[in-house]
Image (tube, rainbow, N blue to C red; front, top):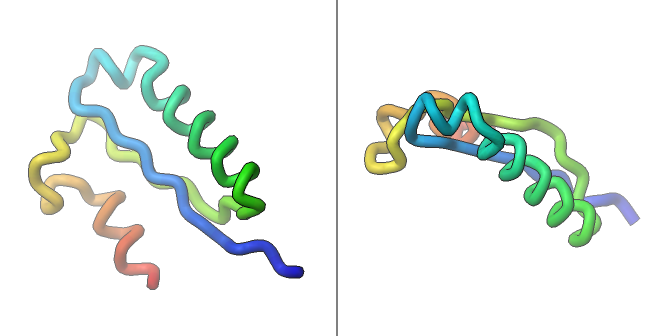
Length: 68
């Protein structure tokens, strides 16, 4: 059976979080979840130092939404 395809999206609000382990931790957890669900990650998106309050300020998120 063909595996379901998925995208990974990560985001942090501050530059301090970018320099820390937050993005890596998010990616690792999402990859493990995808594997557990028998999905294949086809692309990763990340908005670094961007607030989650407004979609317009998250270019990678908007790009991901336009793919489907």
